Length: 279
Figure 1 (tube, rainbow, N blue to C red):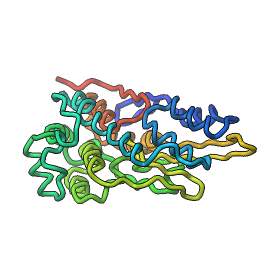
Figure 2: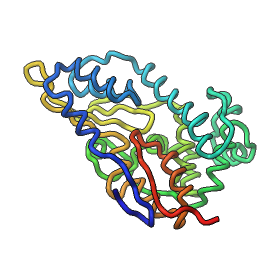
Figure 3: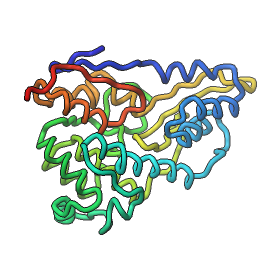
């Protein structure tokens, strides 16, 4: 449990280490399949990262990986986040979320936001609850060296879409908070995603929450090491995005703290406790 700005963060850590220990002594293919079953969130990314790290040919295609990511985004935008922000559910398609297509410029974005159409209703609600500087964190973007280290960095969908013109506009005018991170999912739905790759023995695979990094070793046909670092590991790191974001919230606004966690979307349970907001 960690305390920040009057809020307490409750989470269970060590899941990535447990995953690595669990597959030691297995054949590489068995280890990859086991990870996919045990950690079924972002299943395609989990399996593909392990395959790259253990020297196996990918069993799935990049198209399947992209489909898995986009399915997660649509579910989060259309159902999960609308529930969090007390809105009606949206249609389960890119067309219903973005009826006029992805805003390409800051002016396009502001016009879309004002329209209230599709996902703009969700973005409006977030924009109203989290004004400039509230619920924000400004950290170095994840890169290959940072990806395999469990230190504070911005490892999220927003990190890989940070240079889109609208993302840069939101960062300037609202800060790197919930609106910036939620809009990044819409960018992900419409733009090309980076391919999986190996960097100095570390497998780097995009996923619905950011970038997975996996490093492994195989000796005599069996896995002897598997190190796995996830976007949630970076999110929950000391002085990471969650801690920094909580520090910028108004005191005693537990409703904002829980909405903030939902917008960050960790892949393991995280509970925030503190004093309830005064009526």
